[in-house]
Image (tube, rainbow, N blue to C red; front, side, top):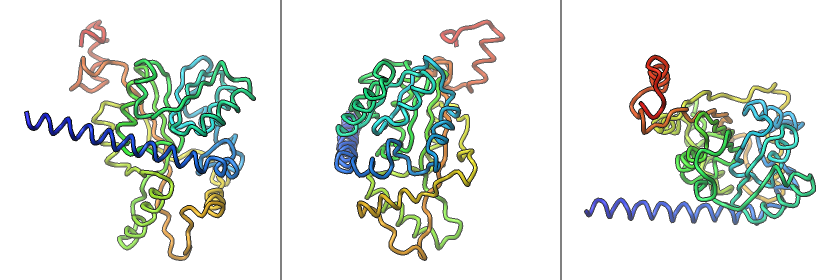
Length: 301
């Protein structure tokens, strides 16, 4: 009984902490939204191409976006990417952000682009998608440099699981903690990671333990990779420097001593077609083979 009460208490504390940290992220973007727009425009992604449409076109291809697909943008900013994707491909997008200022600007931009029937935006915490959307709804859920704002990465991923259709794609493009190539560099990397996390209300993930948790949940890890665009296409993060100069946030004071602390990766995660409760301990290919050989359905597993 005591253990059960302790678990309930810990769960409530974790939920309250997550809510507090999500509000902190919202307050940050409410305060700096105009400055983000001034520097980044409608696409608030630091790892980007000089011509940002090349990055967005790449992301359309990466996610396989097609007309009439149901898509969720988790951490949508002012809906720059969502509007671009909807207009170019015909997808229907539900977009969420924790910032009320971003919601207001996004609604204006959606109206200006006459995309009200395709793009819908609302203020909410992307850790709680099931509260506003029904289970097994979306073909794709994506995080475009918004995943790192999560204080609990697996809570965000589990939230996406709830609303994805079986066979649906979770696409994450974000920065992850870099592994030191020389032991003496680790303290410098840790220092810069802490600086970014504090300044941007971020929580930069470590890739390996995150992938372990993802696999344990039952996701099919389709790919973990760098972005396949030519190096000369990339903007080289000078836009981040411009934002730092404008705001004074996380400025790099000594470039000679600076160690770049992050890697940028794409994660492609597939929610299995079968329901896990019908075959929890079986590998997904084993389930598919069993159904094929025996003429069974998912509920027969």
